[in-house]
Length: 272
Ligand code: ADP
Ligand code: MG
Image 1 (cartoon, helix red, strand yellow):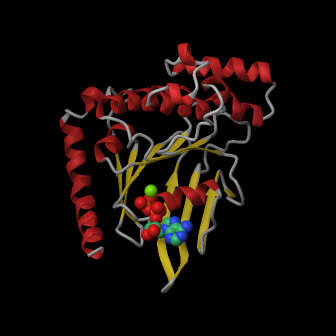
Image 2 (tube, helix red, strand yellow):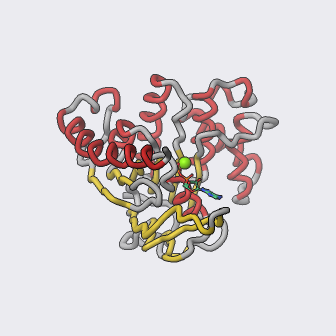
Image 3 (tube, rainbow, N blue to C red):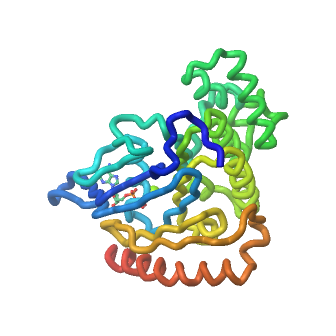
């Protein structure tokens, strides 16, 4: 396994949340969004988190990104407590965060420039990454000239280009149509395999979670906590068009779905 960065200790987890509670002030006092969340992701591991809407999945990512702090418990990346904006992580959201007044190549070059890379070199590298996501011809296009799937690929290129050791993805493909989505998932896996960052991937699509991941973690209905952790021992590289028809895949899918369905129903019942 190759990892970027010179201070990466392979023995330590890339992500470690220990007994994390997160509360928000609310009109009725304190609202508990997460309770006693304990979760580890190893270097190079691809882990998906599934759970009912509102169970606190995005809140977990926010803590890891350093956008918020827990009420109790600890949040660490590579053995360092997360304090303030976490430079170890790259973030890919459902809504892409491209700057509309910049071209695709300028958007991809931006994080590299923030890292201090000279302009010419940053643009070169950005062009190279756009080619890898099959958008070489669209380097000079503006976001509004690209389809949703293409914009998503620009966002992925922009994150992978600066090679963060951890990538956090919050339902990145949920706005895409099914076919574009499968292509995106395939692209993501082959790019991930190039330098193997740790990935924490949030999705409400269990098929996507099983197809992509080394492990699928199930969260309970709110207040969210981890209630299931399933190793996905399907061989890699995976062809996502085919793997979903394998008996092992369907078996894993059904086992996880049993647990997830109960939580989704519980969450639904509590809303009424
Ligand atoms: P998920 O991503 O699993 O759908 P979230 O992490 O977005 O869930 O939210 C979990 C719970 O915390 C929800 O009930 C949500 O309304 C609440 N919540 C999230 N962010 C805030 C906030 N900034 N202020 C108050 N409540 C919040
Ligand atoms: Mg969310």
